[in-house]
Length: 394
Ligand SMILES: *Cc1c(COP(=O)(O)O)cnc(C)c1O
Image (cartoon, rainbow, N blue to C red; front, side, top):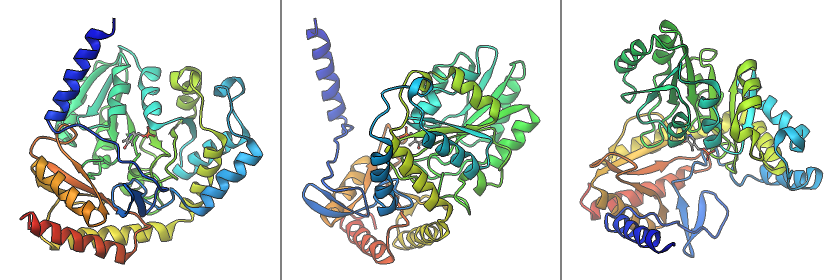
């Protein structure tokens, strides 16, 4: 009888709505890009993870079309039966050489890469030390694993050290962290994490989804940015953000770890991998990324310019260097009013409030892209200034 569950869900949904936490999907009737069409209006997009502007890049679109002709649409199989094409192997090799790691394994998402990682490598004899603000997919991956779970306070190295001491009796210790935290644009202190990991004989795992391809001088992510290449044992990341933005994720690590994942990782063994056209398009995204010094320089210039100017206007901006720019409003209602006024003026931004961020720390999260021009940013800054004054934030 569905009746009881139905009533329960209706009550829960109403409660979510009353708390102002109901999430509606915004429907786009255009491709992803700097300008998108939402509700019949053309607006400038300031909330995509389209950091390098590759989501609808002509070279990527034509690589996908060409692959559709050469390698077909679907595989109708998991990897180890008959679901691996030459281009899947090529993409894995390209990711490894891009990140200077021994080997890589593809998943349909970074969420799958993370849920297929911990339980495959560790069990009740081991311990995982996890930053309290890690991404949901790391948290779920750890939940599936029998290892002891030790959370450390966000980027707090004293607390991490305490937890490492607590775990000295475990067989293996693994420190898990986001490379860049999506709500704040914080970069994890990877240098200190790696030093502590060496001292306490721990493995380091970094999920670099908000950094791969565009952060660091060569786009090798937070690991390159922090100067710890060769010290991080396991990297997971997404192909669904800067790297073309369709779907896909991967784990890059040592030969042994990746070989073991191919034998035992459940999302890899029991779920199809990426469609050929996505694989080919991602290879093209890697081509563009590896030659993408100009894109990264432009993104970095845009980020610096926007951060400086929005701060100069008088907004409370969380400091940092990442293209994620959190503009704090404190109150949830104010964040959503600001987002609505900006939308009316043709600027599309996302407001975040509890439970996605702590209570009283509501914000607008702007994300800068290499595809934005200076005049795009000036337009957005002008609208922020006007809306900020109208709402008495400034
Ligand atoms: C976006 C993101 C993911 C999820 O990536 P998908 O490939 O879309 O599953 C995982 N981890 C982090 C840190 C992310 O930011």
